[in-house]
Image (tube, rainbow, N blue to C red; front, top):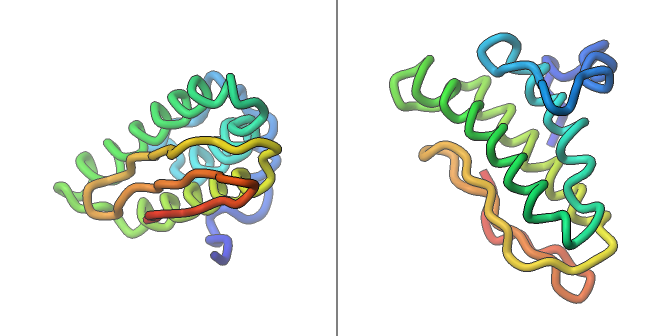
Amino acid sequence: MTKPDSLRGDIKEQAQEADRHNLARPATNGALWARGLTTQRVADLFRTLPGLAGHWMQLQNEVNAGNRYFYGVQNGHQTTDEGKELIRWIADAVVSAAQKASFDFPLQQLRFTADTGWLKLQRVSGRVMVMSRP
């Protein structure tokens, strides 16, 4: 996927400097939230198999904040165009990180908005299998 224009430029630097435990909120700056999420959370997601469950839960909690904003708050239970673009970007980042993992892992599901679908993937025998993606 091509990087959305909103995620280009100095926003990556801002995301790298962000506190991983206090990321920008989607309502404040959606692009910075998504970039911070992929830079600060997704980067750590597949460091160790024992840590995967906890890191996955932290990622889902952040995604839930985006889901609430881009789906319910702004657009009356339809995901905004910006939300769809950022959701696809996040899903692509997770798949990319999974491909670099040094271990196999069971099925993981990242729940996005109702009208975009979920990311479902696992890694078996060194191969990442994506069953569903937004």
